[in-house]
Image (cartoon, rainbow, N blue to C red; front, side):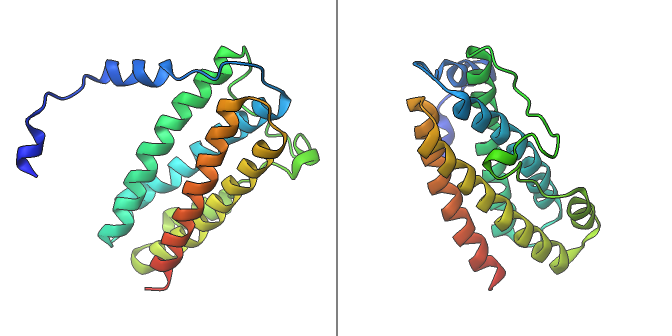
Length: 180
């Protein structure tokens, strides 16, 4: 592995510029906007959970999974907020309880579950995290399904399909970790 690191590192500003260059051109509809707004909020909550797992998980494979999710979802938040700005749409979602009733509500892990996760230690932490995060990623799959059916922007729909596939794979990986 040591020989693989001989290429110069990419400066952080070039990485940010590359992420910003991904555009969601073409027409978009309310579903596309709502999906991205909901996913930004969903990702932010997921990032809070995986960052706890990065620090508190004992198993290396769980820390590695959390680090991978952190990197991926951080990049995705940058991309999604960029698309929303490109469309002159708010980058935040309305958290009012009835604001999303027409499409099943805003999926979220409640503050009680996050508080319990923060207090959990050792094997209890890992079990709690995995159970919460399986449900969390299942919600991402459900939201992606809505976008692929009702969205109109080709890039947003393709992103939703990638989310659906990757989160389904993560769920399977986490179920295996729960059973080991």
